[in-house]
Every structure is written in C-alpha cells, then in structure tokens.
Length: 452
Ligand code: DOR
Ligand code: ZN
Image 1: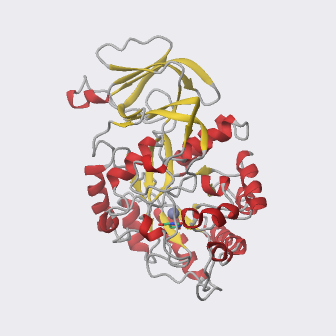
Image 2: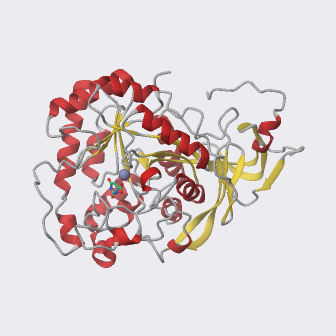
Image 3: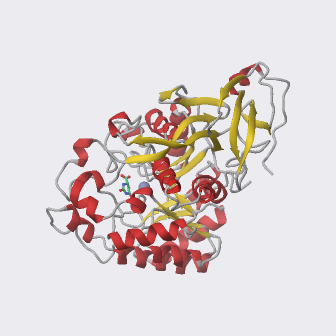
C-alpha cells in the first residue's frame, strides 16, 4: 500500500495539482478498465466509472490508454558545467515528451556527484528547473563515511563506472570493490554498475572506423565484469543493479542470482546492431557498443520473455560537434528519452512484447528496485503521475523536433506505432500533444528512502 498523506481541507497552493482524467482505458496491472482518474493535491484520490470534475480541470482521454507515469532510472541530464550539452530544464522536457514522469540522473558530470555537498547543489539547481520528478545517483566512492553521507543526502545509488571510475578507485582490485559493496550494504544503498571490465586493455587501439572501435570493446569485457561483480556481490549481500547490458548470457546469469541483483537493457541495444553503426557512424556510437545482429536478436527475445528487470534509455546528450569527430575522439552516447516509449510501443504493436511486461520494465520494476514506493500504480494514495498513450498512432522519429538539446538520433526516419499524447506529473498537465506546458521548477526533487 502506498503511503497515504493526510488530506488537508483543500490547500489553495496545491489547487493546480487537481485534475480529472476522463473516460480513459485505465491500466489495472493486468489489463484495462474504462473509467476516470481523479487526482487531488498531486495524488490519486480515486479511479471510478463515473466521476464529476467539480471545479477541477478535466482532460478528455476517451480512446486513450492511461498508464502509470514511466520511470527512467538511467539518464545523463548533465547541467552544471556541462549545461551546454543538456540542462535540467531541457532534459526533463525531453523526459515529459517521452512519457517519463520520473528520472534518475547519473553522476559523471562537471563537477561529479561525489560528495553530499555536490549532491545538494544539484538538487537545488534541479528544483528551479525540473519539469518531472528527478532524483540523483552518486559516484561510487571508497570511504564508508562519504557513502553513509551520500545515502543520507538522498542518493539513489552509487555508480561504479568500471571502464574509468569517477572517484579514485582501483577497479582491478577485488578487495576495493568488496569494500565498496560492504559500505553500500551498511548504508542500505544499491550499487549501479557499468559492466565493462577493460582492465586488460591498456590503450585505445588506433582506428579509423567506428566498427573497429566497437570491436575494441568486445562482449567478453561484459561477461568478465558481470562474473566478477556477481562473485563479489555474493560475498557482501549488497544490492547491485547492472546498467545497459548487451548480452542474453548476462541477463541469464543475473536472473539466476538473488533478487538483490537486477538487470537493465536499453532500447538501442534491443533495436540496433553493428550494421547500423557501420551505416550511420557517430550517431550510433555509444558504450557499451552495439553488438552483432545475432546477439541483438538474442537480447531482444530474452528481454521480451522477461529476462531483464528494467529498460532504461541511458539518455546521453552531446553536441553534434563532439559527436562528429573521428572514431576514437567522437564522444559516446545518444539521446534516448524521446525515442524510448515509441520504440517499446512499436514492439507491442508487432506482438513482440506484451504491454504488461512493458509497464513492468518501464515503471513497476524501476520503482521497486529504487524504492519509489508511491509510484508506478494507478491506485488511490499513489502519486498523480499518469501518461496517456494512443496505441494505434503512427509517427516518424525526427530528432530536429526533440526537446533535448541533442538533436540527433540513430533512429531518425523510423516509423513507430504507439505514441504518447499527454504527461501528467503530480496532477499537473506537463506535456500535451506536442506542447510543453509544465513550467521550469514544477517537477519534484526526490530523495531516496532506503534507510527509512
Ligand atoms: O555511451 C555512453 N555515454 N556510455 C556511458 O557509459 C556514458 C555516457 C555518457 O555519459 O555520455
Ligand atoms: Zn549511462
């Protein structure tokens, strides 16, 4: 049961967080039921067949499906010293336009999110700019004291970036990783992992093609990283979430572990293979890199059979100038917030993925893993985060229309079936039919509650 806040007698400050979503097909967790959702003071008050809007604003949702607001647990919204790539206002606009009512931001920023003070600075900046719920991951740090302090300050995880740790950290040394996991377990905070064990590779091979660059980060790096981290996790009992996995074998290994170990895949690894990298080059360059077509198919079919816990975008904006450089200098990462939902709904329309699993991968499981207890259900007492989608609507991906500052995509020109119509965050209509209605700063800043 979601925590139910005591209702004050109509608080005028919260009146703009009242809305009636009328005549929708409401997602129940198993299927749809026809009715309306009344959101008052930012929370779902009731769902019922007939509801009078009273004085509240009403939105006509007939013919549309109401789903719980989606949660993207892996985004790089940059800001601070990297605001020229993306900032909290544009990144959360991209989230709202993509159906995400909650995002968790990664710590590889300038400065990095590696102290409680820097975490609080980011929270303060986000509270002025965000349009959707936003929380923060912190960097994996070696000291127990900082780990405790980051957890108390509301960090959602400690991110261990194996190819190049953010804080000084020797990833070649199992003992240091064990210490990190012991600290994290005591602070009751999960460790999120970028699983590429590149320790045996001493330098970037000289290359003039993106394909060769990808070959320099082969699947064995991921396999080795997953095996090592799982082995150390078993010794510590810490919660571990593996980011952007690319291999079915990784998902299978993780599924065989305890529920403390969870997995995530991205839409780009599900949809694209090295063939696309050869065709579009920098637009499809990210790490971990795209894999072979056979591997991609295995990952997709495993994910659609429930082998992964989460789908996340790894939204990683850069300027076109930073991307267009030669292989080896081009920065890895692609924007994904505005393509993720149409791509996943297209899989549903093809019969490859069922809608129930889509909601699990994009809302239920992210909420469970990261302790967002009042989210991901359309039930009384839960947060008023709702999206409306049209399962039949066809669109064409056009990165020039992105709300993100990063106006490129490896998916440009692709036709999708199933589209977002509206995004409601805490009872406020933030996005509707191509228009950004939410003002900067209307999105709540979230702090984790692992230790409460
Ligand atoms: O492609 C990527 N881009 N992979 C990462 O792990 C980091 C990300 C970024 O921050 O640009
Ligand atoms: Zn990332």
